[in-house]
Image (cartoon, rainbow, N blue to C red; front, side, top):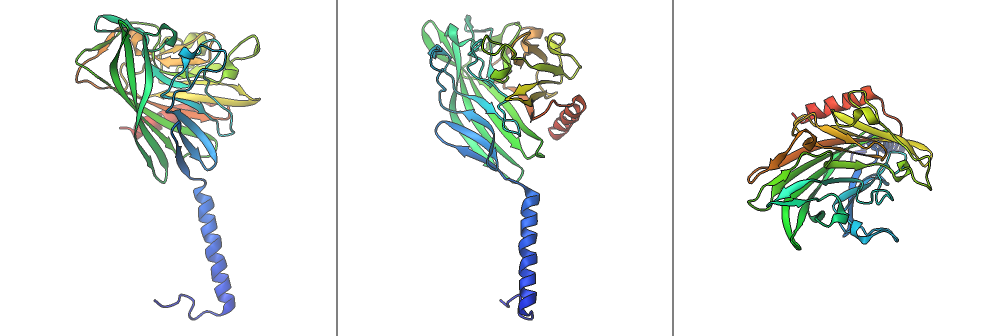
Length: 330
């Protein structure tokens, strides 16, 4: 192999080396920090450079001191951070400790003729837990992990596996002013018996906002705002069919928001949203429109996109993001 600087003098060699080095540095700056996954026995975290975007909890997260141990849970995402470092999700809140960051659970169901509630942990009728990590992937513009959950019912003091669920969580590269990730949930029956979702006011894929948005005696100013794709706020938006919902407020003195986009291929889309009249919480709840069942041989699939910002988001921007989400998945 011939030397590339064979016919160059010393000054030309130094100049060429300088230009090569600065070009590589410029290209590196253009690419920006890399998306990576960090995993151990307790969690999987998606990161951009040194900043954490979100953490999925594999291990059982124990209730804080003074809180009933029944609220311990695994298999959910918390915390979710804003680009400026604020925590946009909440966990083990003093008013509803069973609402854990970003989580999935059905509330009012029937299985083998028995009532089962996977949502309200204090009833001890059912629970959802992390089962295993299926796979992790990293590429130039995204990272993803697929995890399995078990939905377990307590029937006549005996535990029965009802649903097997997988979450595929994909975090995508974005500009510095927002984070974006997708979740696809697939649920299948673990036996030949169907699970009936009774008509009810809430249940499904849920989001609990920052604990700073919870009004308590120690936090009397805790509050947040809601906006739906129909232009509705908290009260007017409850139990309406909508393409997306955003929740925003102040965390550690800084603006923060988290929005959830509902894919049009979801069951009964646009799905009905349950927005609580006081708490920083909402869920897309298709059972509001009436009973349905997950039957043997079927897969119940639901897809959502999450946008996290360090500002109060603009409705037109969210609409554009929703359209991009739809087009990307067709």
